[in-house]
Image (cartoon, rainbow, N blue to C red; front, side, top):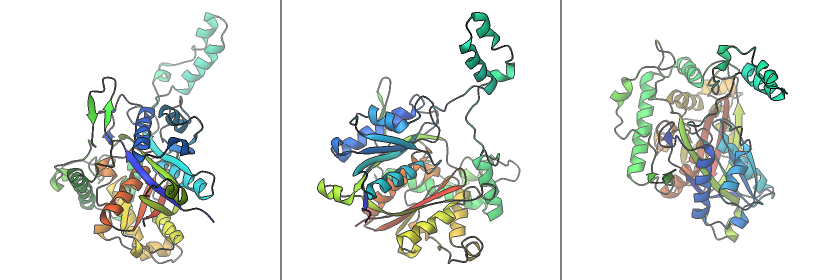
Length: 427
């Protein structure tokens, strides 16, 4: 029989706006910082760690297996095996479930999982003609041969190529796809702004009342290590509905409803979890934060509604857990855009959607507001692509423990029209 998988500890760095206080740190720096601190705080003996599974969405070509590099830089034993994963915005959910499967089957006993993103340090590449010219030049035997390789390079080829921000399959950015969803699903600008205000207000309250104190580490910023970053710098502590209403649409300037205020920002940050078999936790005398009960992934046509796959993955995760929405005490939804959150909530409760897309099954149901994202979400806290899944799991389990409740559903939309969901429980 598969072994039950426990999450025994979790931690994240502050999530900060890209190109601000973490602008000189790489993904390796951020990932190393959170793993090193997490291992110390968890008090799990390092010689008991079998593997590390980590991910980043924007890869660094110098570190194709960033998980292994972080493990080494964090001082973990050289015997700790490591591999990297990527599933867009659900990357660290993938790292969790991949390692959990190995633990359930007995391959590992203990693993560190998580993800990282540095949007301040994205790779800039060369145009294909210029890159080919450098390759050809390297083969030249004389200076003339080396220079001749550049004879066909034009001025336009000298322009650096930034990472693509549009979906390869559709040519639309994620924001443009979210705008499409808002229009097709009848999600108003007022509803989106209200959700953004809700997110920021709850996140500000969580910081003020100390909820995040044990979830977020302090980061001393090199090279002088004189400045300590102690909390997220994206939360609007003075959030007002009137403030959101003043912002102009970004992706459809004439008829659009998505603004910088009701969408998640580009963010730097890292998050990690320590997971192990239930038996191993007992042997080490560790009390788990909770357990992974089930998970599910789904995909839809990117040309349909790019961020609507959670409408399929969440019901699937509940079914695999043998549960209904009424059995869930807490629902945590990744907030890529307020329009995406509201579209998925609408689909979950829609009989018409269930008839058309779920084979006539009963709709998952409507989520009571008091059960959703009680401490804010990605719109207010930020969204480092690779780290959000681990942030959600740790934040959700800590809220379950603080409230004395037992079950939670996590839902994540992801680029590529993917959806992820998991059910967590505590004793």
